[in-house]
Each structure stands twice: as C-alpha cells, then as structure tokens.
Length: 422
Image (cartoon, rainbow, N blue to C red; front, side, top):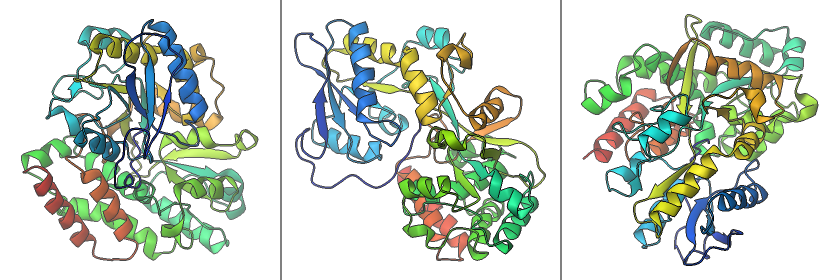
C-alpha cells in the first residue's frame, strides 16, 4: 500500500475516539479488542476497511478489532502521538517501520512465511528483518498524460529529459497547461523532485542512500543539485498549473481527470483514480532520464505492522497475516489504489481485478527487466530516510516554487539529516 505523508495530524491528542474515528469490527472474540490504526483516502474508504477487517476477523476466530482512523494521511506523526500518550496501536497500517524499529516497537514477521508468500521477500526488509509484509509495490512517480491533449499539441510521450522539456514547451505554446501538481500537499509537490533525484542520482548510484548514511555523499553534492535544479526549471518555465501550491492533492486528481492539464506526475496509486470512461484517454510513461534509459523509482509497499506491545501477540500476528494474504483486499487495492500485487504464484488475472490499459502498461515495468531504484522519500526498507526527513524533503520541493536557491535547499536537507541521525 502506498506511503503518503501529507499534513501533520492535529495537535492536542485526546483519547482514541477523540481526534480519530474509532470503530469496532464485527468479531465476537472475548477479551479486549486489538487496536488497528488505518487511514482513509478517496480509494481506501470506510467501507473498504469495514469489509476487509470483517473478512480477516472471520479467518482468525477469537480476534476482535477496534479500528482507529488517523485524522490525516500522515500515519507516522499520528502513530507517534499515540505512542507518546501510551496508546500505541496493536496493529498499524502502512507506516514507515524504520521510524519504530530502533525503539523495539515492532515485531518482525517469520521469515519462512515471508519467503513462502512474496515475490520480493526482502523488498522492504530492515537489517534483514521484515516488519511489514511486502504485498505490493508502487512506482513513484510515473507521468500520466492525456492522449487527446497530446494529439492536439502534436506531441508524443518523451523518453529523454530534453524531449520532456520540448513537450512541455509545445503544450504551453498550444495554450494547454502542461502539468497538474497539487502542490498544497507536500508529498504531491515533491513528485518532480522525487523523480529527478531518484532517476538521475540513484539511477547512476543505487547505493546512494546507504552512502549518505555512511557520510560519503551529500544532498549538496553537484550531481544532486543538478537533478534538483530540474524541478526549479519546470517552475521557472511556467509548466505547472497556475497557483500550483494552492491546489490540494484531491483537487489535482479532479483537475487532471477533467482535462485541465496534459500531464500529471504522481505515484502509481493514481491508476485507481482514472475514470473508466477515460481508460483509453490516459496514458503513462516513466520519469524521463537524460539519456532515455529506463529507471523506475520503485517502492515495495506492504500492509500492517504488529506492535511488540500488542495485547494478544499471537492473535495480532495471525490477523495481520490473514489480512495481508486476502485476495479480496489485493483486488480492492489493485482496482482502487493502483497497487501492483507482489504475491507469489499469482498473475494479475488471478485476482479477478478489472484494470485500465495504463495499469497493464505500467505493471509491465514492474515485471520487466529495467533499473529499479528506491523512490527517494518513499522507501520503507534500509533505504528509508532517517527521522522525519521525508517531510523535510517534501518541504524542500515546495520551497523550490519560490526560491531559486537549489543548492541552499539541498544544504538544508544535509543539516536535517545530521539532526535526524545524531
């Protein structure tokens, strides 16, 4: 499942039913219910959670779930608030495990179970241990495009960075807004920066993040600054929609679906938001590289983490395993959240999911031979950024809309890194 940090959760945490919406599942087991922190999105609705929880409860008799709904999609901030108040959930959906493992807050899954069930068993491992099952994957970002608007401007999907600039220029000259962004939500604002640094820096040096931990490279290095400057170039040339920083993520989807812009750099979860009547209108291509080589900013996602302090440790783990392997959940995530399934022994047809041509075409990047690198700011493995640096990375992207000091913004990230790793 996608990792999508957005606005910080509301301050002043009350009880579980205060800032959050807490509901009980349908199980009839005795004893205290296990608490399960989830979140809502346009695709992952309250109805989805209710149904999926009920199915997993049925598969694990005796386990009852009390759902806690995070007030925003910034699950980590909310989970930490709960932990600080002594209310750390027993089960947590789609968090960043590396932010909790050093404190011993999460249970690792049995490796034999992980090896048996998933295509990339170590895809999101931390120091060799798996804390969230690697059930699915995302490409962050892809560039979605409106075929009708491309035809109107007489352009084709680009492969190189220069071709990408040319396409933007021709679209703008044709009176078409080249790109939708949704920059009011920091993670959405950072999509071009994520693409550029992942493709240009990690594409040439896949171990860059580990080298940053070792201190042998920095964000302030010339190659990173050059990659980050690409986002600033797009801003300066006016290729994003007017007032991009004031457009919410939710509105960016509506705007792009309404044909108000020709391209939309976004995580592959947008696939679940393409209206069926536009399945043949929306195409997709990878973030362009300088030489046209295929580099995919990749993130192996997963389902739920299990707290070491869970009231019923065995029951919590059994529920997490049942939920993670439920074909119905994967079908819903494929169709509604654009998740690329990563279960062993299954093809896309086995899930019974109905998907768009854009899903099929982009899923080929997952199963095909190409260069896959960590999508910077989105990894949940050893390549996860330290502390809250994801948020600092997203903030740097927003800052590049108003500041031409790219090197200064990268230097701030190095400062934040030093603080986070002290």
